[in-house]
Structure formats: C-alpha cells, structure tokens
Length: 174
Image (cartoon, rainbow, N blue to C red):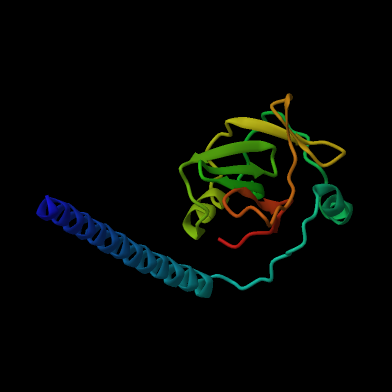
C-alpha cells in the first residue's frame, strides 16, 4: 500500500513537472514572437515619417472648429468617383478597415490590418465603387446611408480599434 501511494505521488510530481516545462516552453515561444513583432514594428517606424501623435482625447467637435475653415463638409450622395478622391476618415478594428473618402463614399476592407501597405492601398483606391455613402452633419458626426450615426473620436485607451484618421489628420501610427 505504501508503494502504491509512493508511485502515485511520484507520477503526480512527474506530470506536474512536464506541465511546467510545457508552460515554460510556451512562454519562451511567446516572448520570441513578441520580440519579432517589436522588431518588425521598429523597422516599420523607421521606414515611415515620424510624426508626433496627439495623445489627448478629443472629440470631432473640437477638431471641426479648426478644420472647418480648411475643408468644407461633404454632402454627396452617389457622386461619380473622381481620380482626386482622398481618404478623409479611417476606422480600424480586428474585423478590418473602413475608409471614408472626401467624395462621400465608404469602402470596407475586411480582415485588413492597420499596416502601411493596406493604408496605401486604400489611399490609392480611386476606382472601386463605395459600398455606402456618408454625410458630415453640423455636429461633426457621420450619417452613413441616411440612418446610421458614427461619432469619430480619439480614444487612446483602446488600441485594438478606433479612429486612425479623422478629417485628414492621423492619430494612430500604423
């Protein structure tokens, strides 16, 4: 009976050691993966122009005061796509990117991450027809397809989704 208890105790300690080793190996792999991602981000940052980010949380209403004189609000419904179409608002999340152009069109990029290549692709996208349209209302919110309201604000507490660009101004590095 003592041998049986001793065998059980030894086997339990052996299994727990194997579990700890597996967890340690998993942690080592995760740290290596994070280090590689950090290096990749550093390389991307070196390749991009360095611009200081606005770290204050602000609403579009505050931004519209200064931006209203620079760019008039867009009031378009299904206008013909122009070659001078420019990215005005950009929303990012785990589901993808959502680009709002100055001609009032909206294009979705499902499963696209906020990377330099994807943003450049969206900025140079002048041929694709928008899936939705939007209008900027007086209070600064976006009225999408005449019924859905979206409120572009910068929230630095969330880094997995939010507004990367609001009214031509970048708030997030990609």
